[in-house]
Image (cartoon, rainbow, N blue to C red; front, side):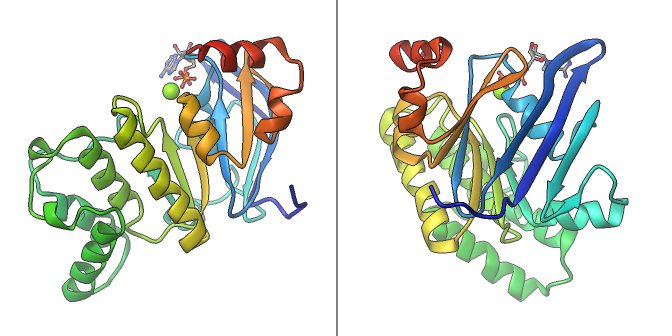
Length: 248
Ligand SMILES: Nc1ncnc2c1ncn2[C@@H]1O[C@H](COP(=O)(O)OP(=O)(O)O)[C@@H](O)[C@H]1O
Ligand SMILES: [Mg+2]
């Protein structure tokens, strides 16, 4: 693994809900143009980590630097600039059901840019082509399969050409073939668009296919960070159990 400058630096991050500490002083780096997979049993704090590192939920302590700016101390305008360079495909980040795929993808473009209708139209078509969903452009979410909905949500997350893409369990509820196709798409985004991707998944197949680096969370701490081969040879019981039984 080559040594590079991190794109995100998390230091002593503590996340709480009320008095309950979910993440306890975690420190980790995310590297550019890599796929980093956050792993750990259900309820260990993976979604909480994504939300706190993006300041969608205010951390109880620590710092998070994106492109060497501490996003916890930025003013709203500067923080929004950082957010615009990130795309999010959240677990329940559903599409709006009352509008078409086309309109769903137009929302971030209309909210965050001053581009003309013609340019926005072209960008929507490019993004849908990228995720292989051109034929569904005028469909409504209810008319799409689970895999198509995920791809439409991905097209929306990609609308503003993010440098960093966050995905929370993108293949949850998908059949293995559709899930593998989504992995291929994620690998393409990394290779063709040099995107940095941070993804939560516990699909063992996905982890093997896409992970450049893993972060393994357990009881509020990071048990391991590094590549998959090293994780599997680290002799850490929780990690061994995870890979042996695919424990969720
Ligand atoms: N909004 C919330 N309020 C209170 N507790 C929460 C909230 N969201 C998550 N939790 C709790 O925090 C812990 C971590 O949750 P989460 O980050 O969603 O785990 P994961 O994504 O790894 O399954 C769980 O115990 C969960 O019940
Ligand atoms: Mg979660």
